[in-house]
Image (cartoon, rainbow, N blue to C red):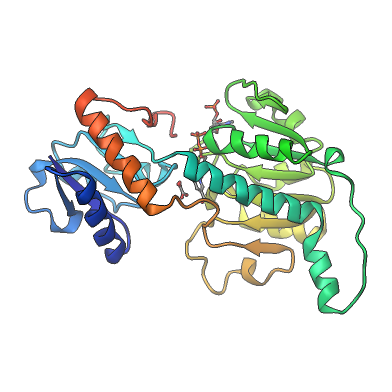
Length: 310
Ligand code: NDP
Ligand code: OXD
């Protein structure tokens, strides 16, 4: 069984080849760029593959995304149709996202950016904020990560709500579903967290129209994908004061170009796509287990639905 691995950085590819080979004795794991016989490749394990990479392999049984999102795989216009895509998800990834969302929700809730500005000016300035139950945190997307994030903020005492495509029941979280309930969901969200997958339907969802539906002074946390956000609309909403602050972990172009206005904006916190990066050794174990299960049974639990886009 041959597995071809590709990540944008050659040294990362080499690392994944090594650890996957250790976990898949009897299989052949190699860098995609070193594959001599494309017809032998049964599985591709990738992060941000290049256009046409998968089309080279006529006998591909499945593609593994080294991550939860599959948008980077589906972006390949030459992607062979019908090849199953396996996500890499699990408790490690979910826990890291819980921590990131808790950190930034609390930071906005307690107005830490303003408190830090006061410290810089040696100003003993006490900021009094509402208690968490009087603050509404909305989470867009209630999958593995969004449901965990919503449950986490509910556990901190916030008034938590979430929005997804299909209806859900999550203890402690008010849930909304579908386009019909989107406006009701948004109204009253003091802090909005985006954990939607990037699809044709969700691209650009964080736009001027959405910001206008949020209460004045709302904060945005985007830890899903850069193209969910219309950058100029956020800058305008921040400059008008309608949106107070934003935390952004993901961007249209990564790394975020040095001259991008987000870097120096006083109301924006930039993090470099680190909200939830799976521990690589844990991820390698999950991927090896999924490959073995798929090889034995022709399916596995973490299959994405390529037609749906996530
Ligand atoms: P899942 O696929 O488990 O869940 C996606 C959720 O979004 C589901 O609840 C789904 O609804 C909902 N959804 C999808 N499309 C729509 C729509 N059109 N309208 C309303 N709701 C919709 O994803 P995960 O929770 O595992 O991950 C979410 C995203 O987080 C990933 O796709 C990735 O982009 C991002 N991510 C970012 C990381 C980072 O470090 N910044 C790390 C890991 C992931 P339903 O349940 O009804 O299908
Ligand atoms: C993912 C990511 O999709 O790291 O897992 O963004």
